[in-house]
Image (cartoon, rainbow, N blue to C red):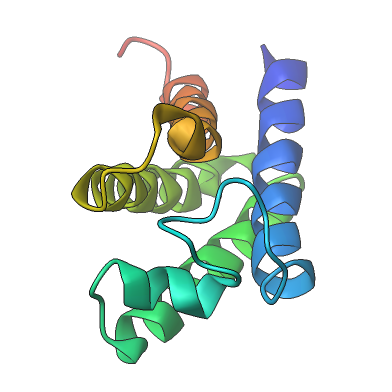
Length: 126
């Protein structure tokens, strides 16, 4: 189970960093509505620009904390919980703009992986 947790933490962390630092200004098939970049996506959801920056800070910070959890496994539950919460929000935004289900796939997978990290991080007996 430890190996699975490490793999999931790496996938989630590197995925978040890829989306927010590398591909932020690029178009993908998964952008909400008809957005061409991440900032446009938040605007298409009707969210103020401040939410874009807050979510970006939380996601990049969570990604860094998940990478740190490779050395400090006891902290993994916290950033994974934050990511899970944010992914629920992402799914709700896709529903709000009536996106096809396929556009929600990355958020759904990140939610599943984040919840798995949380479950694997719980102390035994839970």
